[in-house]
Length: 135
Image (cartoon, rainbow, N blue to C red; front, side, top):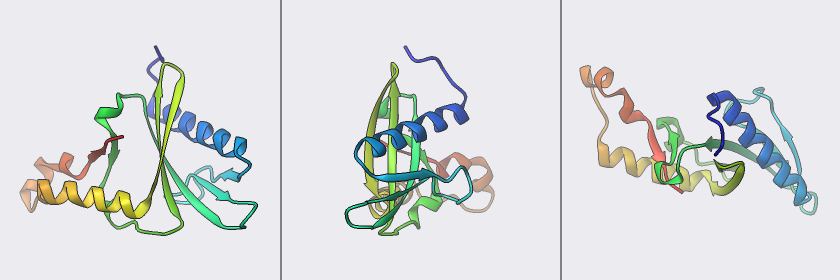
């Protein structure tokens, strides 16, 4: 069983694992090391020259529990932005690449189903802004 790590180590493990997989597939990829908000890895396809942005979300929890997403993800619909969802289990990795428009649509569906808290309810229901994306 994989040891329980703090969230920073889990995030870094997912980013490095995604970077390794991109390198093995001959993509040119570089981590932004926190210098670009909402972008973890910049990826170039050497055959086409197309650049993509990758936001990596990593979890050690069962995939059925999903990845935590927040309200800002509803507004991200950039054709060059992809999400890489990484699941770590027993030192092995599973990867799911999803376009940002799909993430925004699914996240928006969660918000519509739950409703947006208003006024005093916002403080009591702050958790409603964070919903899982299941694999």
